[in-house]
Length: 209
Image (spheres, rainbow, N blue to C red):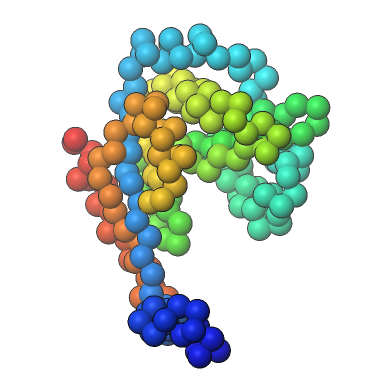
């Protein structure tokens, strides 16, 4: 197996792969983005969208989504999230018995992949995360529309600072948030060593920016 990897990747890259797997090492880079909501701009965007069929989603709505995207593990996570309405809310579009779009907001905590720690949000903050778009409606502008819909709902509930965490390399997500006016305040990392994950984010550094 090692010889096959050397032939495929070369000696130096193969050594790196083996080293990372042996030590269970890895690094993920994230961008920390924030939008300070401008009420007049928000109103202008909301007037241009037709979102009459957007609803707060239930667990049963997710059962109408793509079976590959919403497997057993994902559905278990969704059920856990929906059990705490103060923490998470899900919004989406269901048409003709099919879930076309779903998206989430976190009202209390900033949760990150691979890290069990929950970071508390400030009282006027909320987090946008975890959106799904059916292949049937991709390219129809749902991402941008639902972004502003979430921002509007959050603003009306007293949240005027909206956060987004974007994984380095997720260019489409970064572009959508940038077009909506989100500012990239900096980067942080999640690093793994011997299977233990370390987080470099110090949220308080961004709170006063």
